[in-house]
Image (tube, rainbow, N blue to C red; front, side, top):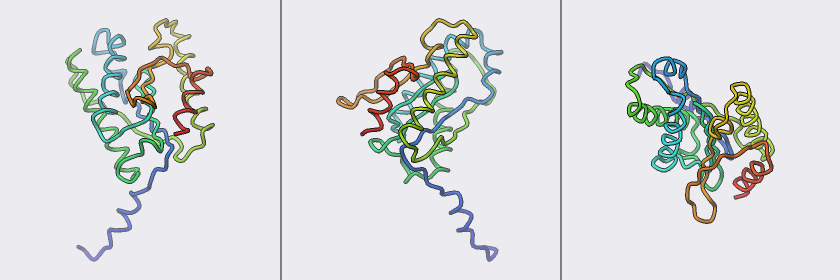
Length: 196
């Protein structure tokens, strides 16, 4: 059509993501929901946890670990549960963001009638990253959360550490824990997951 070779443009969008990789999804304009829905802070954790669990269990994105902080989810993909679509970045980022958005929106409706559009932006954090890089990234996100909790004088574990979901190696069951990634426990978990 029109005598152009469009294959160049299509190929330029097919960049591949190498594993291990962290893909971060961050809520956009969630402060608007805080202003609209009473007690949003109380049920944000429940909605994020439910949406992340559903995404990990019911879609093709079988991340080995998900670290949920406020309106942000960090998914860790490893060799054990590789990325679908041959690692095509465009497809993975758009589908992950749209899945989480639709699942979140569906669950939000149970708590309040928020009708404005909302969404998540997706970004790649270090494809084919060494273990230490991934470990430092999770330490940094956890440290950032702990600092925020300190400033806000928060006491709940959800607000202090965020929530971690991961597949247990032996049983392959999804486990929920509050993990401080700046501690030895967090370091051991990341190293164990990446050693698969």
